[in-house]
Image (cartoon, rainbow, N blue to C red; front, side, top):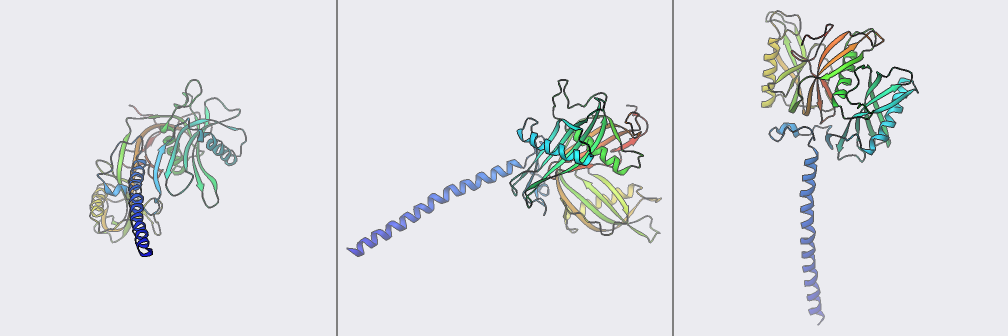
Length: 371
């Protein structure tokens, strides 16, 4: 009797274990599929329609992008922006050493989609006013708000430009409310780059900005190369040049700089690329031919590539804008001094902006354009 009961109990336990295993395995598999589908969909940029499935290199994470699924736009009505913009405004007051600065509104906002931290990072473009100044005078700031998980606190990085826009800021409606203006965020970045690169007697003031032409959606892999070159076949001197190849159609050389680059490294969103890789070799060949056609340094015959020293790469996906800007360096922000075409690439994967240089791209002139 006891032996029969033991057999029944043992049989029941085995059957129950099998059933439990079947029941628990089915939801787990389905859940894994759902999670995969969800995480894939969040990588998409909601205003970038270019598919990236055809370019596998574009979706490979770099060592510093693990958990980062890119940036998406945030509605200006989002309740979180009120808290974040108040924090950012206080940080700007401290940096500008002025308690009279007040927030007019938020013109653009991005949120980082991350699987590795509880609170997201944000990028905001704020329009601020200073008490006592004219209605056309503003302080416009791009603010990176980063959540420091180790200290459990927010940190803010601000880049501001003064603006005296008599014609009005496009994002401010007649009733004083704000509409989204991504062009203004790119304009602030470009103006700060011009300030950083130029030898102006005083910081530049933005007088006018407008998008020129349609926006270009770009997706692919950007390569950055260090190349050893000669200025002529008879010259034994070897220069080291850095250049980037952007995933445009057709491809484009960008940001070429020759000179002392010893110790210069590229971390952040870039990762090291294998020089022996077929795509890298093809890219290097393109860069070498492009360098031959351009007089980057004082050389009668262009540059002659000798060797590829190092290569980095990063996936990019975002929007390229062409902006017409009028700037002033007279200190008062009244008289135009520069008329610029700024080509700005906004990478929605890394959240970074890049001023695109090279023939036919970013250029400034002391005289207004004729067309």
